[in-house]
Image (cartoon, rainbow, N blue to C red; front, side, top):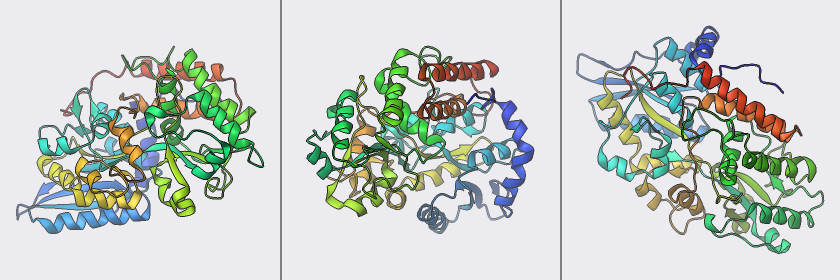
Length: 446
């Protein structure tokens, strides 16, 4: 399907959507107080926006706000939860209306766009060195733009292959022990073929094709890097031509199409029970499925690295982040709130609610799932060992991911891979030109 829009992330699109989106935002937070201000009793009041998320995450967030407010008297935080599905659009609408809160939670890959638009303040001068030293490198990498740190997450994400050990052993295939030991792409196809011999319909792999949106970029762009391609030229962030539609990227996306369309190794998973229902032996998905999968298969569940397409196994990273908006009048108080969220108890509480990887080294050491003998330790190895790939650190990212999501959908439905990627690269380059190459941000961002 041809793309209909050219300006995916620039100011033109934001302005166009304001009139439609702002009423939604107002409806979501009718009782929100004004941003940080000094009261007659010298209490700094911080307005905090977060995504509603799943119920366990929501409850933890609300509890942490209460704990922070009880701990001290000088700063009081007031939380507003917004629906996750339209969260970014609502934040953009509020930004145009100059009504952003003091502290804002947002999806990590959007940090560069927010900085470029002048919405975020750099955290470096307010954040303690101890806090920075305790963060795992992937969290710092995701939130750093042009050498400055603009946001911090309480957790990071993990992406890999869940498998059933008994079925892999039945098929007589090797079981990788680490990312350095990952199956090659050819070996992975051999694994799929071997598993299919023991499967009634031959569909042995779940790629979560029932998911939508950002999943496709998060889950499958690391394979591009593993094969020698990428979403964009990261040396300049000025073009996708020759990278997204280069021979390496075409070869990787061709393999996915082959698995889905021609060899039919992939279960469409319309009910989201392909793995737990026993229809497939392997599931390409993230940390959030661990609890459900472990409940279904117990000790038979094994976590594996993604295949190596030629340049080593690569995996996704990045999740929700906290930042301080450029309009906040009390950035020191706002950073104190964020540093409270990064203490072990809050980090472990949130990681317990969503099974994500704790963002700090001290919390990982106390986590049963992620310490050295924990069942999800592979995710820590990937995030700290150089296997995780941050999504492109450019304000063009919203455009890039929108274009790639459409390209992946076209490829999974059988469109010519080279033609699709040629068009995707051209669409991304056009967006970059339309925004004058995304020059350095102006205003209070550092």
